[in-house]
Image 1 (spheres, rainbow, N blue to C red):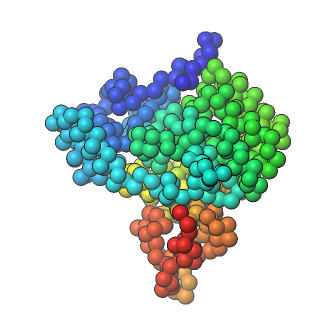
Image 2: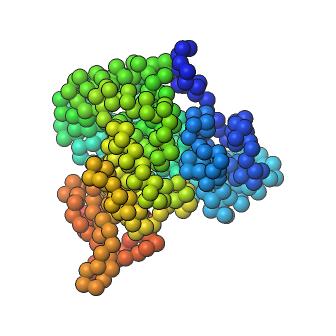
Length: 441
Ligand SMILES: *Cc1c(COP(=O)(O)O)cnc(C)c1O
Ligand code: SF4
């Protein structure tokens, strides 16, 4: 785990979970009702927070409405009342660990633990062997889940990867071996990008990360190495003060020197994550290696469902030298009912925020839903022959030919996900669905 060297002024990383959060004075000072809600929800969905988030990101004067508190601490509304009450009853009655586990698992199975066919689709094979830690959904870009990178410095309450943090997926979804990965890439010259994801790959030691990245530098058709991470938000000292932070920077430099692009895909949800000196230093240090930092975030009720939050966040990111990249919709899993913003409202928020910033910030695209057929962007609401419709398009598609073809759905101000939409103009299905049905699994 992360630890700064002896001469560093950075606080030593300390994580807290459901079992230990009462050791944190600020959390222990919450009302009994709030703590009970943490206990109930925390038995179903993962909870992990650390001292940097507690001491430097959360504004405790503003709790429980503080966005970073909402982002990291379980809240009652995250479970539907029936689920909440079932678990609350067990805890109140001192039920056995086994009873609690069974109920937790029964609830979890009702929270759509595997959205967008994550476990079944997109897992490629090489020489007849399944690459369980790889997803190849979009032609150019391979997703890679290194097995040591499958936790995070804190957990987001809305996380769509929650099943692996509560032990449901048991890392079936990760791999260690680089040999198979390299063999697969060599057989697929269309792949230009490798995206390391998790969890958070930046939880790994620099030497482990290097063992994955260095072999990739010898492959000519790989142009970009991306690292998806929330460590800039949850523990920026990873890049400046950790024992092996210097090794990490040397690794980043090595990627740039090899002539490839290193893209840090940083996850930020609110400008409140962008105000600490530790964050500023980490961003500057990464940029010094030649890497670029692109930013992405989902749009979440209770956290950032406000155009001002987004325009301020994008401007601040650009001030720091980062490039706004994606705004996502809340995925159809876990506590989606609590966090989701309807698609039409999401488009209004996106549009209002986008109108407030200069073209330099308008590299951002969204709002986008990462659904089974692809990344689907809500282009907006419009009227065609007097009929109100929602215009959409693919930013990424399982079939590259679907990308950037506008299509239309019936106007629906409540829909939060693409599977709730109905094709406009009396069409039976969307243009991509015919083909979708015959996709081999
Ligand atoms: C988002 C995503 C990517 C990357 O897409 P870009 O549009 O290139 O950023 C790759 N694979 C999967 C499965 C994704 O969901
Ligand atoms: S950083 Fe990403 S993977 Fe980790 S908890 Fe947050 S959303 Fe999930």
